[in-house]
Amino acid sequence: MAEPMKIRATMKDGVAEVKCLMNHVMETGLRKDAKTGQIVPAHHITNVTCEVAGKKVMDAQWGGGISKNPYLAIRVKGAKAGDKVVVAWTDNKGDSTSAEAVIG
Amino acid sequence: MNNLRRNVLKGAGSAGVVGVAVMAGLLKPGMAFAAWNKAGFEAKDMAGALSAVGGAGATASGDIVVKAPDIAENGAVVPVEISSNIAGTDGIAIFAEKNGFPLIADFKLMNGAEGYVSTRIKMGATSNVVAVVSVGAKNYKAHKEVKVTIGGCGG
Image (cartoon, rainbow over all chains, first blue to last red; front, side, top):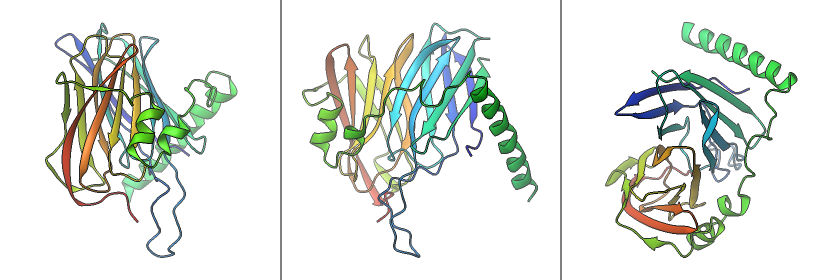
């Protein structure tokens, strides 16, 4: 079950800045469990998208090299205060979640 | 303890909402996302990872700024900020040269998104953080060395 993510969008000098903080273990599949010595299977976010006012502005693919509980910030021109921002991700086990915010 | 309880409640609530959305056909799992570049993300060397995202022939550019710490004490969390001042930037890929899997992320940007991405990455060893920026069919790259005192890729 995906935990909720935090998202914030603010206007700064005519550019919208979208920041979000996701909750995810981001296992690379290379790490060994300290106790059992077994390799911890890969479990990480693979795709992240961001839409502003219904238009897709970012379509990203991620590997396990992104840190645990990922942070992401992007900047979007042409957006205005009041526009809706939606960020969604899915991981390699098919889990997914999305969050939305209004540009303030 | 109360915090944990709150998180559990919040988590349950959001899963319910997503579940309903899936049932209503609003959110189709896996459909809205581009196919994952398996070859690129599972390439174990820099050359393989670069060519998998089409960045093998990228030319070095001074208009790309890779902002990362000179020394990262904890390789598990290295803040990285890529800004491209090249007009028409439509993609940014991030690599850590000496990681087990060098390709970290591949961002496609459109509809007004600027050539800017800020995130946090894992680094297994001291190496270059490389950014490959795509502008239409052309690729440009820039890098910055980050010294890692404690690796973040386990092992």
